[in-house]
Image (cartoon, rainbow, N blue to C red; front, side):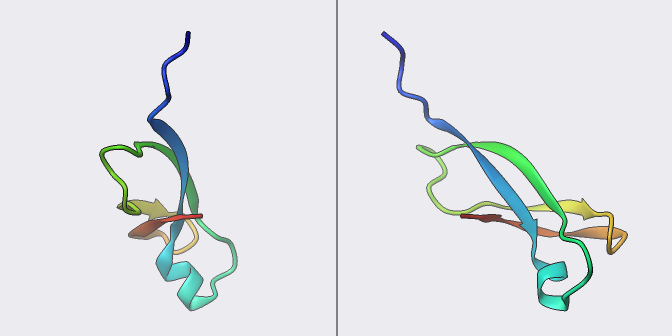
Length: 60
């Protein structure tokens, strides 16, 4: 019988481009352990539309 999966795929979206209304939205896909990390994650990732590193927050 298969184990219960604790790892889920999440989508990270740039917070600065959404607030500024810039054309194009920077999104990344990553995996997190929902048992250890119950809150939404925030990571600094590169936004090619703004051409700099920005904070990306988990959505949905």
